Image 1 (tube, rainbow, N blue to C red):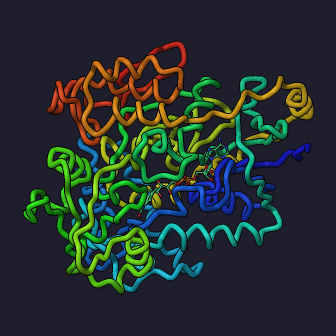
Image 2: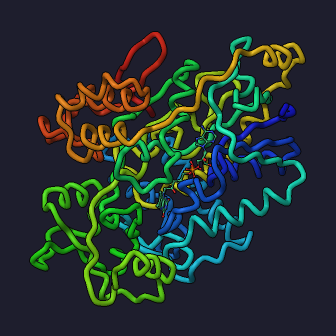
Length: 468
Ligand SMILES: Cc1cc2nc3c(=O)[nH]c(=O)nc-3n(C[C@H](O)[C@H](O)[C@H](O)COP(=O)(O)OP(=O)(O)OC[C@H]3O[C@@H](n4cnc5c(N)ncnc54)[C@H](O)[C@@H]3O)c2cc1C
């Protein structure tokens, strides 16, 4: 099958990819969206609690920025936070105008000083947003979508990215936007769909793009034991408590996620007590808990942390531009620095909307591809095989780069043949301190010497940079 060239190629059909595709198409570009799975295989589809955005009467962008920076532990890139919180409310209002059926009340989540999270049926936000954006993309005659087609590598010529290689052959485009999500499914215990193993970072590093912050994997504290089912933070915002086997509370339920996750690991076994929660606020989630064999009305639910959100990724500026001409990244696969060392709950769907839009607008300025470059693509060598994450690798990543990390285990993981697992370990070894979601048992406190972002740039090795 030969895939025709397009103006903007978007890889990934989660919230960031759909946003980028719709924005580019509305401005007249021909867009192709590629995904290795189907709609439910994105993290966006499964997102629960909601989308942060200062739209409440008692709220301001400055308050949202303050909460984001506090959660990020002195590492958030201030310019990225400014963009996120200033443009965020407008993006949320656009979704309301499009018809996303947000609940009438804003939710409260950990780390937020105000009720500012817009949600759908308490915990069905991701599905509601991505299915609505997906329907709009389907209706657009400028957007084509190809599913079940993995991107295996980037195509480059004349110092610029000219598209991607897939098992079906090359695809060329004026601009390529990677919206391929995170890497949390590289950990054995995860909330992410199985395919989210960090392919974006793997292909971008191979092509010579810079990556940053790979040591920062956020672990969600309350995931149903033995499953991927996340029990949203909004439940704790509504009064659910965390208790130990003796029924005693042991942690501030609305403390930042990293603190709650570590408290759970130290405790060994923990339960989320949902008995006081109004079930009608979270109808879908309560039904799923019941399908998993628990009755939230009568018994506390056993929970433990799981890898959840990838803070690190491909380095971009505030318009999604990477170090490679013609290549953009947005959403969870990008490292804008906006989350610092710890992502504030519900800031990531917002990140997809804000930075997905910005990346699309910038991509539209790319010059057309000369025919000679398109022809060059036709002569590309065969694509590399699709990257996979066998159970043994995922177990090793969980063991060696989990909630609490020790340097000996990280050193072993650094030798992994998997490029992303190895990068995580190398970054985690370089950050010889504990900050935000990255916790080293040998150095359990933050060290001001590490107030910066570790970045791997081709030819320059791993170095600490200060982003403004
Ligand atoms: C269970 C769960 C609950 C969450 N709840 C919330 C929440 O309430 N609020 C919030 O803000 N955030 C939440 N998050 C995080 C948030 O959902 C994600 O950060 C965000 O949706 C990421 O969107 P994205 O578009 O960047 O990537 P994704 O939505 O993950 O989409 C990635 C896309 O890339 C495709 N892809 C990957 N690799 C390849 C490849 N090699 N070739 C082709 N295609 C590829 C995938 O198939 C997919 O289509 C949650 C996450 C999970 C897992």
